[in-house]
Image (cartoon, rainbow, N blue to C red; front, side):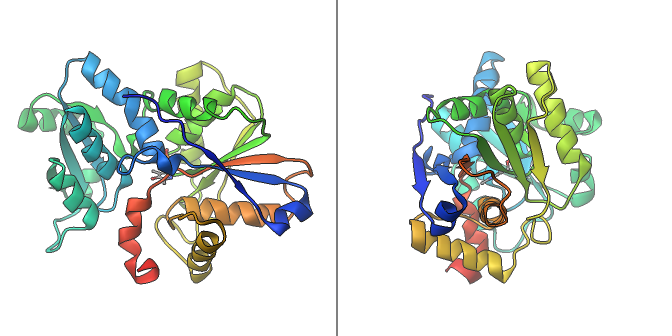
Length: 299
Ligand SMILES: *Cc1c(COP(=O)(O)O)cnc(C)c1O
């Protein structure tokens, strides 16, 4: 389980030159063809912990398009764990590509209706999963827990070049928490929420950072201005931006996370948010398998 070392891509744009800023994209989508980006970073030390606890089965949660379900299935297969995916909702007649891939990689797929799913983290529910399924190492939805942080910290520490800001897309906030812990008060971090504004996201990042570092920091914040209507929602200008970005920089983004972050960054740079001379790193957290849910836009 070696740590991948992903490259930085310079994003050349006349707008950035005009504003006097530099933008670099940390190509963490290149960690692995199937265990991409932050999902790989967050899984890594969870797998180590599972092994140390002597558990050979991973159980986790997600929706039918979940990048985390996909990555957990692939990682389980590659590193010799059995995997169980508890999937929100009812089975469809035709499974999504994500669920098909997970099943093909040996993941046992169990659906849980939405009402139960909302209480999935309750001790009673976990207990009944143990009665039903035996021993397992549980990874929360999205792969976010305390063991998610060291892998993200490794990602940040791979960046040897100097920079002032580091930006990530945020869902559960585990990745941002890892970034904030890695910075340890230096530089600035910005999370771009892919969900509508919620205090819970800011709170979970604060809590995770505190649990991991036993400290709090104020060199970070979350922008809630670029969620495009909420989780997995898109608008034509977002789709156009992603297509245009690919043509200009030969790099694919996706509309749930990285597309929204990059759109937001371009907008903030345009509006002069970043002082002249700023060097910005944006993390491409991967998730490209999720494009299969947007075929009508991306073919
Ligand atoms: C899951 C995911 C995120 C969100 O990460 P969190 O740690 O949940 O905030 C960001 N980008 C991509 C591509 C993802 O798959």
